[in-house]
Amino acid sequence: MLELLDLSKNIEDKQQYKQELKNYQLELLKLAKELDNLKIPCIAVFEGWDASGKGGTIKRIVERIDPRLFEIHAISAPDSQEERHHYFHRFWKRLPYKGKMAIFDRSWYGRVLVERVEGFASKEEWERAYDEINQFEKWLTDDGYIIIKFWMHISKDEQFARFKERMENPFKKWKITDEDWRNREKWEEYEMAAEDMFQKTSTSYAPWQLIEGNNKWYARVKVLKIFTETIRRNLDLRNNSKPIT
Image (cartoon, rainbow, N blue to C red; front, side, top):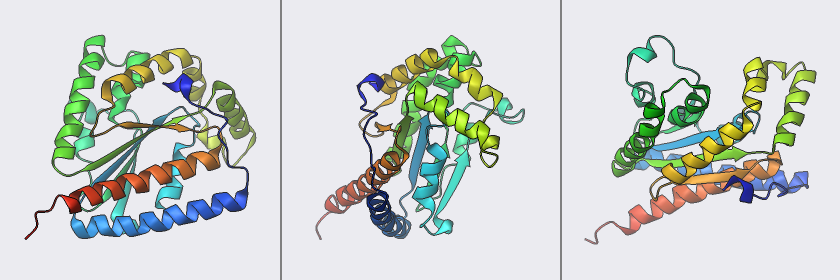
């Protein structure tokens, strides 16, 4: 699936980018309030390559929304306390209240990505996780949650350019770690794990959205477009399914 993405997709005009971004942010502002009024929870999951633009995109999603209506969860390796519980325990704790939004920068998909590739989970554990993840998301959507899953995709050359820029920029140097460089050496293994993940966990109730991320402006606008359209479509379906009295 990843090799079919056209990474040349672009927005070159800054004014066009700002206008499209503003339009979708305004729509999302209204939708977030509507979700709150109807007590419908929404989850957004962001996965993708290091330096693929997850953080910058999340920033544009939430910057116009009432901060009382969302939470952002930056997921890293489980700590010693979390390791004493079932794998999903730390994610259950972070699910949004009804009417609120939760945005996950990395997520439960770590089991079939980094934990698989780096050997932190056994083969039995990460193979079992596909069904566990699907069941987890099915439970949530059956209970009324909206789940939107994004994979931010960039080329290996673009990642190298962004790593280099971060190394040279004192305001961004904190974003780059030795682990990022080590992960890059396993690009093909991560790509294989991602393809398996798409095939086995892209479902009718929680499909994956693949985002061409070489151009940051294009990626941000596309994510916001999908985000708003998915919420609106879900709200319309629920309104149309209400019985006539």
